[in-house]
Image 1 (cartoon, rainbow, N blue to C red):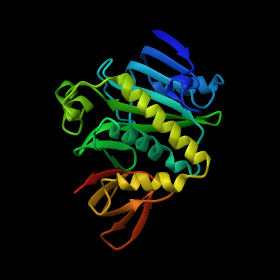
Image 2 (spheres, one colour):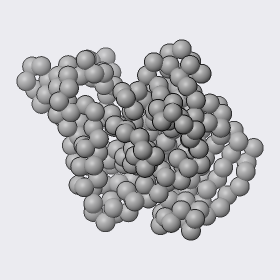
Image 3 (cartoon, rainbow, N blue to C red):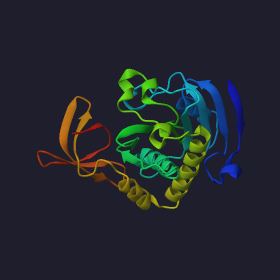
Image 4 (cartoon, rainbow, N blue to C red):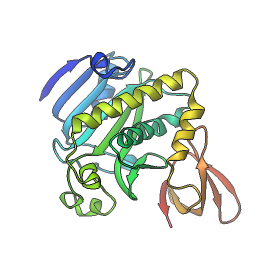
Length: 253
């Protein structure tokens, strides 16, 4: 069921994000809907929000499970940044800064996760482009407990309300994330990629730790060095090789 569409920029104090906001009770995927809207000619800054998804997904084709009305399910149409690899880092940083405003202490795990106390509370998925725009999807577990999720998701997952030990509002989290994403987008447009990447590094949970990276059928072990300016991860393998990874599934050893 479709709710409404409106311009939230005056309310949010944003310049880009919130030019149009389409809200739904239920939808297949906010990313898919955003790409459909891009195809129909909607501009950068358009936001799609849903109370629940039937086909929500994360990286590597994984299904994203939500608790109806208690998770932030949001996609923003954005112009691809330069370099393009920064897009998920930008989304993860916006989430992390929003959560810090709620007196939480998040960390960012390359390439697209936001953690609290080592457990995943949010994920970012970029898809596209369509007509020059990318769908930047953001999912945040706001109110609930891991026991309410599928068994395979309970151990790595966390909820803001559980971490903060108090009630959390999906709307408040959404508004904070949109404001922080708007700041990041405007800084990128002004050539401010360097300071944004430095903020990501300050919140990085992998630097200096031993990790395993699954890249397709290949598995690599080594030490995570840092996020690079283009969004890739620098890794020093056990064989002494220095890699710059564009994608992969990271496990901390």
